[in-house]
Amino acid sequence: MDLPLPHLLLAFGKSLLFTLAGVLPIINPLATAPVFVDLTRGMSDGGRAALARRIGKNIALLLAGAMLSGSYLLDFFGVSLPVVRVAGGMIVASIAWRMLNAQQSTSEDTTQMAQSLSEDRVRIKAFYPLTFPLTCGPGSIAVAIAVGASLHSRRSVTETMVNIAGGLVGAVLLGMLVALTFRYANRVLQRLGETGQIVFLRLMAFMLLCVGVEIIWSGARVLILGVMNAG
Image (cartoon, rainbow, N blue to C red; front, side, top):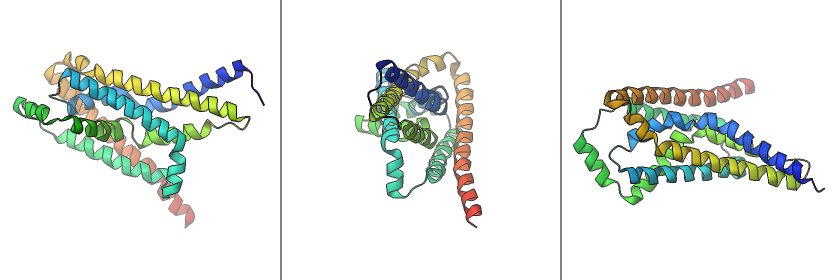
């Protein structure tokens, strides 16, 4: 049946806000921005801005793909969401651990890093580890898959399409927000000074480690409960 335009606009707005409210707290670009600055030391402002835009684009595409086909892909490969959480959490925790134990790089090391960053390497770095799993990890993907499943309406195909459109616009807005946050994160951190940056980056690395452990536990707990119930 044909639905009135106000109803479709309301459905679009609800889907948009539902996507933002569900995924944004997990992505939390403010918490990941210091990690972005730390991993891109030595890059020029233009290179960092281009990298931030690419990460934002990757996140929008990754979230959109998860909403549209995530559940079908997991079913096809026989992989459950708890397993995705455990694997992704291990990667996040490993990266955070290396950041906690990393020594402050010298200016010579920074210069060599900047010279060795070719365009191809920047593209690879933009997806791994900066897009996945640091910014858009297994928790974000799991939520995006759940959001995508909830956008399907039993009333009509038209309402489903409008809901999906709202979710996709939400994914694009999230990508733009991450790109802007990463783009100007270095300016904010510079005001902290060198010592303040080191302390802040170490704190964020520790929080990232805690997030990784939490992701691992959230997946492992479901798996353990499944084994116990099966027994």
